[in-house]
Structures are given as C-alpha cells and as structure tokens.
Image (cartoon, rainbow, N blue to C red; front, side, top):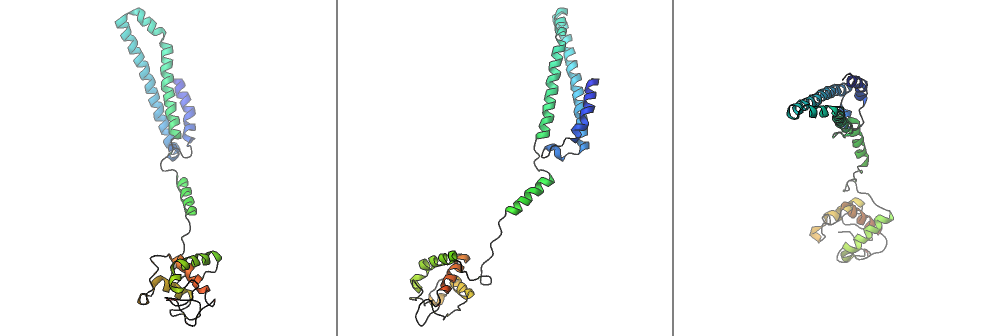
Length: 233
C-alpha cells in the first residue's frame, strides 16, 4: 500500500500538467486535474482493499465448506490470484485515464473556435455588387459583349432586327434615343419595358447582370448602320 501512495505522489503532479490540446482535459485547470487524481487514488486504494477482503472472505467460505486441505490449496494460489486481480483493475484504471486524455472536447478551446471562425471569414466569397440604375456601368470587355450579343440575338432581334436596324421596334444604331441613350437609360428601359408601346419588362427573365451586358452591346451598335429614325423602346 505504501508503494502505491509513493508512485501516486510521483505521477499526480505530472498528470496535473498533462492537458493534451483538444482533449476533454484541456478545459480543466491543473488544480482540477490534481484533485481528480487524488480522488482516483482514493478509489484505487479502496478497490485494492475490497479485492483483498473479497479474497479473504472467499478463503473462509472454502475453509468452512470444503475443509482445511481445500483452504490450504486456495491460499497457495493467493499470490498469483491477487496479482492478476490487481493487475486487471490497475490496467482498466490506466485505460480509463488514457481514454479521458484522448477524448476530444465537443466545444473546443477558445483558440480553436477563434481559428475556425477566422478560416470561415476568409473562405466567404465577397458579395457581388448590386446592379441597378444607380450603379450600372458600360461594359466593354469581349466576354460581356459576346454574352450581350447572344441575349440580343435570342430576345431582341425579332423586334429590333438582327443588326439593330429596326422592325417592329425602332432601330438601335443611330444617335436618337426615345428614352435616353446612356447606359443607365438603356438598362432601365430594358429592365422595366415600355408596356404602352408593346415592349415587355425583361426583369423577370434576365438577371441584372445580363441586362447590363445586353444594354452595353446595344450601345456599342450605335453608328454601325441604320435608318434615319431610331430609338430603343
């Protein structure tokens, strides 16, 4: 018993400092771990005494029920029997301690949570700017104009002509604009339409980005060809 206490006194301070990062013990203070170790030591001593008492009681029962010879044989195997019992109990206790030191904590440390939040913030893509009549700008890059041309060919050419020369709707290639010829004006006209003249509002069918692209394509058509009268409508 004295040896058990001596070993415990040596290892308890080390256990108090052993707080593996990310384990359930990482949230415990050194004092809490030390007190838990003392509690475990007391439980260990009590269990050792219980095992010894159980063995003694079993020996007395065997003596009374089977006689002195059986009791003698029982006592001859006591050292081995007790060693196995102690080793089994101590081994189970050590496994439990190791398990506690390696169980990950559910919440994580404050530093871990901070790191996760920082990573989440860096991974969030920037919010795309809102495109409306107050922010729309003229696009001149080849990709945007190509997309605008594709939208024009599929949605606008039937009324305004394949090259903006006009038809059911007015031409789009001269410098005369019924509803204004700036990028803001053309964007707004396409988005809201002109219902009284038969032009639908495209807001429900095209995104604001697509409307910006087709409006930019239409504006770059100005002066390319045309008739005397024209305007987007």
